[in-house]
Image (cartoon, rainbow, N blue to C red; front, side):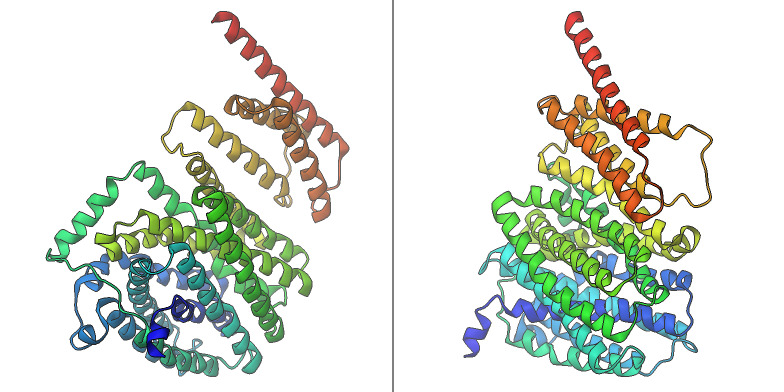
Length: 518
């Protein structure tokens, strides 16, 4: 019976739960807990920067990859011994949070949060390396999918139990319950199968250098590292303000949060399943591009939740956002695993996983200040702008054209300009007004977009491209009207359309002159 339990990929369902527990404990419940103690959203944003510790885990990953814990190593091996130790310590740290009042002991709360982040990162290092080495027995994308489902079980299904059984105000009981669950998970680690761990006779420092040297020799690695660093930046910066948004618009009721968790749990299966299908049928590079687009769109949807904070919108938008997160998480894990050399599993994967977190974590300390300065509606629109570089670079990844040249530059500029126009059209201008003729702005912007798109897409049917841009201009005007931020103006549609035809005419004349001169 035990041997059957060991020879399975479904242990990663529970290991995913284990990985999610610290993140959940310091996620939405943590934000609501601090806000209930009269901590401002600006302070909340700054407190969450403590998660930078997780982003720096590549600094101690060589030690986790090499240091053998006495007794535990002989019993469990390198990966599972570190995993077991970190799980037990995390249980005690979560237990400690249950005895603290953040109103009087905010500094102590932050210190405990930092320790939770640190040992969570140790758990992640061991678990990521274990999962990468476990793909000897099962496909990497299958393991990533099962792991993500487990992670979302920890984040959502357990979250729903917390809010349903305990209520959002009994914070000490919430963290006591989470500590109890954390203490139960080491049993899965003990029962899991031991993997073949590559032994290294190198010193920790030389192994660290060799791991980076091997990584930097990969094709187009600089562009790949930039893509990894910005791919999830908008999601990370947005995170701390979700609790603040729910509190401000009255969506922080325990039954609302519980229902959200149940629906989000279901959405995880949808997103993970779609990702698995996409990776197998459409390949990983296109799946990464698709994931960047849907994350950008799902982030922007929270602006509309602020405008229309109904229970239905709350559930629907979070459901779609969770599909997007699950989809991108499975794709991203599969993508990172493909970059890792098995000789340096823990070091390289920890570095790449850290690179995902560092830029967003450094920026999310300002999230509360941005939300206060521009309002929640524009804050989530700004998160959309942060997602544009990821869409552009993942498009080049999909086209396998990561080397920069003029043609790639025009393609990226075309995509970026279309997204910028879309988001600027939906921004709430507030009391500001422009002295320029807005119809002239519409005309000029769409003329430039059309010209750049036609230059970048010489092999694509021109009529098809023109129809897409015209449809974009019309749909944005209707969306503006739906939000109630601007009145519907058919003259704007005419200006947009004239701009499209002007851009086409200019491109046609330039192209004909070039052919004559040739």
